[in-house]
Structures are given as C-alpha cells and as structure tokens.
Length: 433
Ligand code: GDP
Ligand code: IMO
Ligand code: MG
Image 1 (tube, rainbow, N blue to C red):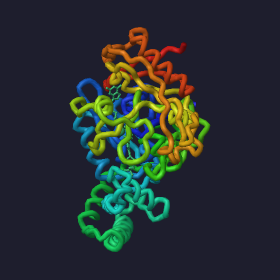
Image 2 (cartoon, rainbow, N blue to C red):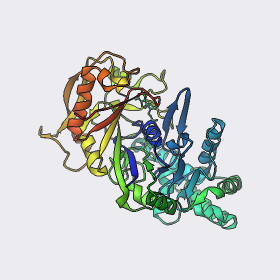
Image 3 (cartoon, rainbow, N blue to C red):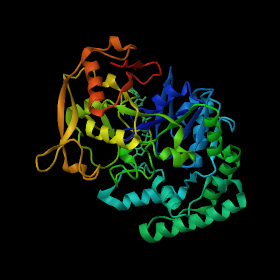
Image 4 (spheres, protein in one colour):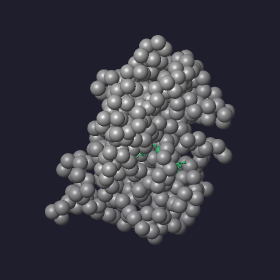
C-alpha cells in the first residue's frame, strides 16, 4: 500500500514543502492533488532555496516524477515561469519528469481579474485571497463551464472556448463590478503559446499512478494549504475553493482509496494564518512580533506567495484533533520548533471556553463560529538553547522534549519528526516512548 499523504493541519504554511522534500527521498512519484499557485512551498537544500507554487516540491530530487492531478487549477503562465526557474537552477523538468492531468482546470487572466474584482467588492468582508484566480476557476469547474488542460490539445477549439469565456468574464466585470474589460487578443495569443509548450506534458495521470501503485512504487501526495482552509471542512467562508484534506487526494488524482499507507500532518509548533477569518489563539503585540519575526530571516512569517505578514498564535490542540479526525492522520511532523527557543513559557491551547463559561474539548459545530470560543491554555516551561544545530532527540533540552510529548498527548498522534530549521538536514527523528 505505497500511497503516502502529507497534509497541512492548520491554515497552511506549516512547512509542507520541506517535509515533502524529505519524504521524496524514497518516493517514486510526487504529486499535487488540489489548489493551484495560491500555494507557496519552500524547500531549502544547502545554499539553494526553492519557492514552489505548482510543481510538486519533491521534484528537487532528480529520481522523482512529478504529477499535477486533475484536482488542480493551473495557471499556465505561472507553471511556465516555475519550470524556467527550476531549469535555471539546474533541475531537469521535461515531459518525462512532469506530467499534467488532462482533467485539471485552467486558470485564465479572466479568472484572475474576477478574483480581484470580487475581493474589492467584498469590502470589509474580504477573504484575503491570494488573487490568483483560484475561486473563479473552481466556480467555473463546478458550474460546468470551465476550461480544462485537455482543451490545450486542440488549438482551434481552444480559441473558440477561450473567446467565449473571456467575453462572459468581460460582461461580468462591466455589469457587476464596473471594472475595466480585458483585451482579448493578447490573452488568446499567450494561451496559444502556452498550449503549444504544455501539450507534451499532458497525460492520463490517474492511469499512470494506478500502474505505479500496482507496481509497488511509492507515491507521495503533497497537500496544498491546510485543513482549516478546506472548502468543506474549513472555517467557511474564509477558506480556499478546493478539498485540501486527505480525502481530496482520491478525487484529485483519480485513484481508489485502498492504497493508503500513511497520512502525515505537517504541524507548525505555533500557528499562522494569512488572510481573514477566525483564529482563536491569535496573538498580537510583542509576542506576535516575536513569533512572526521581522522578515530578517527567510523563514519569518511572511507569505511565500503574497509576501503578506502572517497572523500568528499559539498551537491549538482543539483544531489539531479536528485535523486528525477529518484527515485520518497517522502521525505528525512538528516544524519550526527552533523558533520557540528563548521563551520563558510556551502556551498551548487544549480546550475552549464557550460563551456560557463551559469548558469544551470540541466545539459544537466543527469550525463554524470559532469566534464564540476562548482558548484555555496550558503553560509549559520554555527553553533557552538554540536548537538549529541539533540532530538527535537525546540532545534536545528536556523542556523541548516535554513540549513534543505534550503535542502527542493532546493530539492523540505520534510525532514522528521535528524540524529545527528550514534546511534539509535540520531534522530530528522522534523515538517512540
Ligand atoms: P508550506 O506552504 O507548508 O510549504 O510552508 P511555507 O514554505 O509557506 O512556509 C514555511 C517556512 O518555514 C519556509 O520559509 C520554510 O523554509 C521554513 N521552515 C520550515 N521548517 C522550518 C523549521 O523547522 N525551522 C525554521 N526556522 N524554518 C522552517
Ligand atoms: P500553502 O500551500 C496559506 C489562503 C489565502 C486566503 C484563502 C483563500 O502555501 O500552505 P485563495 O487564493 O486560495 O482563494 O485564498 O486561503 N491561502 C493560503 N494561506 N498558505 C497557502 O498555501 C494558502 N493558499 C491559500 O490567504 O485566506
Ligand atoms: Mg506556504
């Protein structure tokens, strides 16, 4: 059963990219199944840092084959510039190494214009989207009027469909948003060029993966975003438009469910959120600045895709248990433990207080109405040592070990690894007690 799944257990940016990079060392296929270039996954290998938005993070290992599944929405312009970036960095990306499902949907300049116009119109109710056209592309998919990667194979038909799509977009931009219409010709021309380039990459990726799994090859599914941004299970409406969770893997790849070996949850040792929506353990003031950083370090909490400062807060065990349930997690990898060094005490939320003053382990309605709850904290002793040079569990300060074991206790899951820096080698395997 060689399908391994790696998902984010919070609001994204848990360090999925760097964990996928590690897990890719023994994977044959590295695959994305949801989202688009709203994702920003960072992989640091030696002096090189890669920020990946569409291409699976595991592509950095030269032996892997990358797959973009049918569950994605793909902006060809972003994909091409990412392929160029990787090639310039010496990573081979060719049709033999990267395959794109014919069933994935296209993001056009029309979707991007609509995303931006809709956000503006929302005013104070803004979601804070990444502005990448994700919502409008999935809207077209669900309303059965989308363009698919398949449509890139027939250039004549592509022009007809694109023209119809852009004319509709222009009508909406004008009538609903009083926004400037888009000029069609340059968009059509660009899409045709992209189509010519991408045609050799297009494949029936579900069939390829099915064969690979039958041959006992290891397939690693890389989630984008985090569960709390899932369209069905996240803090709606402050969510993205795809199924982020492990269940999205099967519909997003076109494979059956019997092949799962593990479902690992990437979990940051504290929490962050970029964009609007509830965040029970959110901090402000000095402690927030301390956890976020100032931007001086590459790993400080500023969006990989948009550069926006991320909101930050303490780890939330209530939401972690929710992530375990919805994803069927088998283990956690705890990232950024090094960032907690130097704190006197560390707070961890393990329950909520509702408006009646009742302590609850689980909110009544999932993650709806999270703003009604106050976090109940357990205080743990901090540690002063710098963890970034440590590679073995026995070398970790006692308080850091207590922290990791506490996360295991409140989540009900084993922590298999902790990371103590962004670089590939900055990882510690956690022994079973
Ligand atoms: P993703 O979207 O889940 O892949 O995460 P991002 O790449 O958007 O954000 C995670 C950031 O934290 C990146 O800058 C990583 O290089 C960095 N990072 C990952 N793990 C660690 C860690 O253990 N310690 C530190 N200091 N940085 C880390
Ligand atoms: P990775 O894969 C963090 C957030 C946006 C916004 C909401 C909807 O790097 O963890 P969208 O553009 O998807 O319609 O925006 O989702 N968001 C992310 N936040 N990490 C991400 O990806 C995100 N992808 C989308 O900020 O709040
Ligand atoms: Mg990210």
